Length: 528
Image 1 (tube, rainbow, N blue to C red):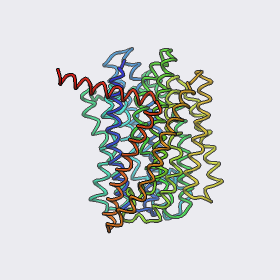
Image 2 (spheres, rainbow, N blue to C red):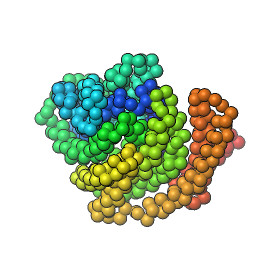
Image 3 (cartoon, one colour):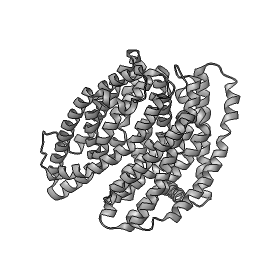
Image 4 (cartoon, rainbow, N blue to C red):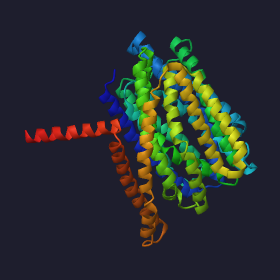
């Protein structure tokens, strides 16, 4: 069993490399906005990417949820050699399945495009169909990357798996920097090559931990059958959640030109915090909770769950307040270049603020779903997801035509929050007391500290106004905004941390105690 020290090290590794990946992703989004703006081409690209991503996500999510437990069972029952055989067998089966899906997707690209571009105008829809055909090969590369990611996580190589966004974003950045004149079709091809780069990036680490390629294909393997059976409810649950994406994209394409792009830009910015921190937390806690609940140790499982939820609150509450206040400069710095207009920035800022309200509930939902999977319950996440989608669609139909992309984003936030509350209630019925008193106590303290931090964040605007008066030109203005933003955010983080410490938050005091102890030990060693 992994020690607490190893878990902490693994979490830090994922956070570090995810942060680098997200910084590159931030740069990529800025380049994308600058080169293509928020017009018909970008709307079509966004819709086509969503269509292929839905199919890829279904496969990758099913693999990530069932592959690791399958590896554990195979190795414990049959040994190391069969673990490699199982891995190669899964690679062969998902590859064959993916090739069939690619062929069908290209043949029926028009109908696949209806998923995300039903309300698009004829010109945009035609481009969506074309781009969808070019983007279909991403399915097989995503599936293979998903198997290798699971294999490396099982072997404890979380850093490599956490860094997977880096090669993807580097391919995008290279294209946008040097080859963007090829156009939107080239950007789609770059998106496919980016996922291929992820496989090439993972292979060396896979070889280091013992992976060896061998052609194996055995559909009768009982462990593969078990994995496929377990994957079915996960596939259904994921597809239900993807309905939110489908509905929102279609409604956005039925609005003014650029609405789908604005929605996409705002969502990408909002989920950056998810990709850095929440991914690390869920990646580490899933196997830990699975072992605890699987061995019948409900107390330990609940303890891990409780700590995970509080950690999520400590990260997402200040992120939410910070994004609400600083959304405008963040959008300006990231996107307000080239073809991305001031009106695009205004719309994206408003949409981002509405999306940000879902940050806390989406993050907690990720943790709660891992708890359900740990107790072998895949039906409840499906049920909660269905409620989420129903509320979202209902709200979209009521408000989207009045409030545009703001209404679409706000609908997601409201629906996700209601779904999380339902998920908590159902989980309490299943496993008993969840330690809600400690969670609510942590939430109150976090809100108090984050509010103090938020009040300070307002100093950004007079400082920005003062320094911008001394510069001219978009590049200099953006640089000033970035420097001021970094300084304000840095001080805000310190205020938040000190406030949590003064409020007596145990986790923060433990960190300070450990840090002081290490410093004192180093001093003693030097004196000795």
